[in-house]
Amino acid sequence: MKEASGKFVLRIEPELHKELRMLGEARGKSLNSLCTEILENSIGKTTRNFTTPSWIDIIKQAWAKDLCGLVLFGSYARGDTHSSSDMDLLIVLKQDIIPNRSQYKDWDKISEKLPQAISPHFVSLPKDFQTIGGLWFEVALDGIILWEDSKKISSVLRNIRLKIAEGSLIRKTVNGHPYWMKS
Image 1 (tube, rainbow, N blue to C red):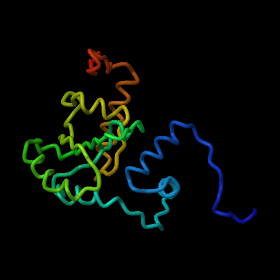
Image 2 (cartoon, rainbow, N blue to C red):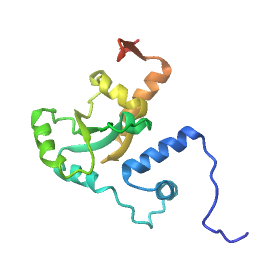
Image 3 (tube, rainbow, N blue to C red):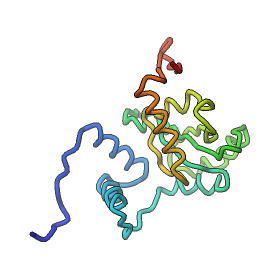
């Protein structure tokens, strides 16, 4: 077998390319670095030391004891940003933490340390499917998990996507605003 050069061409669907590019941008990584990390993780190789963007670390530190994960959604996740776009960030707290104004006041204190405009959306990790609200359904459409402490958020989003695919959840729109119905 010929010795590997470390270079090759990968042909993927344009939509996947777009999603990977947006995920790389959100994580502060080049597309090449992100793909290398994903491929190494998929075969259990962890020799490289990849770091998260500093703003993710700032948020993790601010809510360390209560945080379950961070999910990018909205225009940044979809790849349709414009000059006035802010970054929508779902900040998932533990199930027993009820979001309230104090989290947003704490956010105001750290927001000046962040490199860009981020719009925080604090939620609790749902206990079961019946307690999941419309925001979670919207996030499931195009959300990108930036960090999670376990696979619970991945599981919630996967279950929502399955419900959408099987037709148990239906997205409708009135006057340009989406809402969800359980069938």
